[in-house]
Amino acid sequence: MVNEQDCNSLVLTSLLSKDFPSIANSISINCRKENIQVNFLEECNDYWCRDFMPLQVTKDRFVQFTFNPAYYKSPKYHHLKTDPANLNFDLPGVVKSEIVCDGGNIAYYGSKAIVTGRIFKDNRGLKKEFIIEEMTRLLELESLYVIPSLPYDVTGHADGMVRFIDQHTLFINDARLFTGINYWNKLLKSLESFNLVLLLNDLHKNDCADDATGDYLNMIMIGNLIFVPEYNNQTDRLAHKLIEKVFQKHTIIPVKANRLASKCGILHCASWNLLQ
Image (cartoon, rainbow, N blue to C red; front, side, top):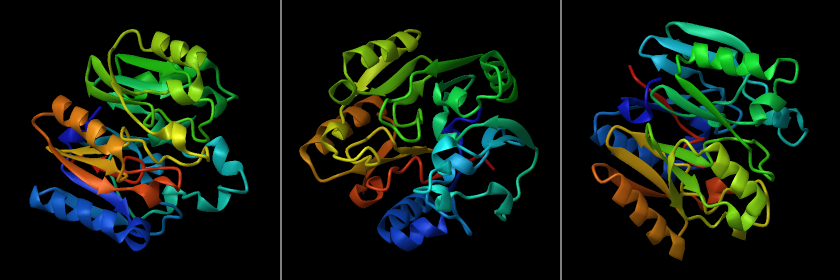
């Protein structure tokens, strides 16, 4: 698959630009300084374009999974669902799949990818073996790992839990304070093939399960830029310092994300990388 940092174009929604202009402007200005093109999707019902846009396998090949996750069937979220078929955004070589999967539930690097067990819940009519084999084939993977989704997470997405540093190493959100030791041990067991770097967060301080405030893992990586959430608290400095240490060749750009994070997603959710 095409790694996010190897892309030269970033897509945001016009809705994000309208409701969160400071975030959209910060991303756009810094990307254009690095000759990274920024485009805006019209006709979107929410900010989270990562979820309904296709996955890029090669420069000229994409996979569009079916966007129909269980949580969008709730009256609370149903009106926010965007149909990717209605978007005026033409791409070459798009292969469509019957498998229901959000883009936010696939963390990947090269020929390895990670999804949560939500993939099985959203595809109850399909056998687990078929889902794994078909996704592995479509995305041209060597390995697809399935990890347990966070117990409280409405979306069940992997991109709020892990982030590839390289093929063998992951950032992992420290979930012990808000999940318990049993879940934590299951998560570590499912990731035993990787080296893990523990990333601080303040998610345990949130009163609402829909609130992503305090998450630093949900960052945008493109080219040499990394846009990292910032919340104006003491954890910012520690989390950003670790990210800078791990990605020493990248430019780290903090983006104030309190209001956006309260909507259940952050920077990675609200963007989509593209290699043109």
